[in-house]
Image (cartoon, rainbow, N blue to C red; front, side, top):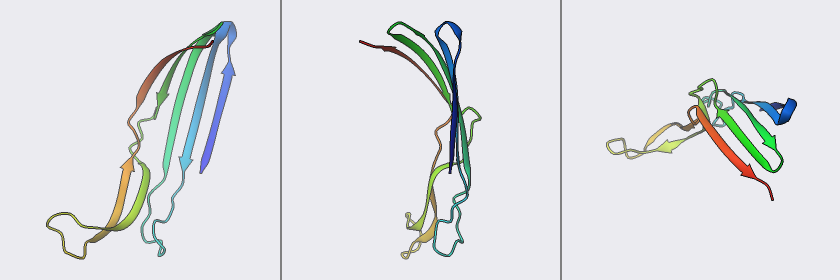
Length: 107
């Protein structure tokens, strides 16, 4: 796992940041016959601070990754499948590219 980020304060109250999160290949069972794949996510953000007010905008999953956020390997059974079930990888994909804007007032 790698997590890295950088922030910079620009002039006149502006600031920016960038973040990278990478999860490498990980075996999902003891035999290492199933793998969840690697995932890399990049996010960017920036904003403006003035006195007690902060305006901010962030872009998550900037590169539009469609990999797995988390993956498991286990036996499951859907309707119509054999009674003993089927072993396989079950996963939750990363969230799609998102933009979030916020206003914060300090007091």
